[in-house]
Length: 316
Image (tube, rainbow, N blue to C red):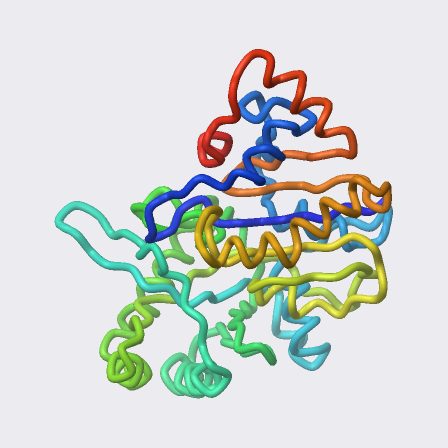
């Protein structure tokens, strides 16, 4: 049976607002929403969502190699490429004691901006063994000539946080962090940033390197549908399938969330009640909760003892 996976931000620049439908669903989840639901250590929400779209029994591939092959094709995976990761443009600001990523610190580039960065990277770093590649969507990837042993974080985990705890770790982390610092110096007062600031857009202060792995030669079988704002999932070549992944840009309770709720969550809930769907999975931060067909029974049983909590308390 199929599943709809709904991902939404835990934090945003706007004050938090209650979201009654979401809170009812969390209260009726298979597990009480404060008792569990964490992803296993080393696993990421994108892995869990991608597992719904990858064929049964197929190993979940690293995210960036899959995205690069899907967006740029086999020509982008050369014999000189041994490891590839996302190179996500971000905006961070230094304080007296830390460097914090802005609440809206993950930046989207126009394809022309991405292409210009690639050209200038080739000019400045031509003698390095690193190569910047732009996908069709404007997503940037960094290719390395040697494999790296590192653990990285999605930049979404670091939004409005001190970035120190989210920097790469592992045997090759020091070298990767040093390279990220070189990129920051390159981007300081870059022509692209002068243009962005003239348009009242946040400047790119760095490229966040994450989601890496060995390059892929062939795409795994992928079936299902995707919706929302996530460029990675939008880039995947999908065949027909009933499971879907929705990535909402707006936090629950906001005006944008109400639009996403009406467009995707409410239809999924109707399909769940009609037996056309096995479950809805609700994901934010490091947690995910599963809502199944008889969620209203769980909701009724739990209301005897307590009221539904604000949605954010379920994910913190």
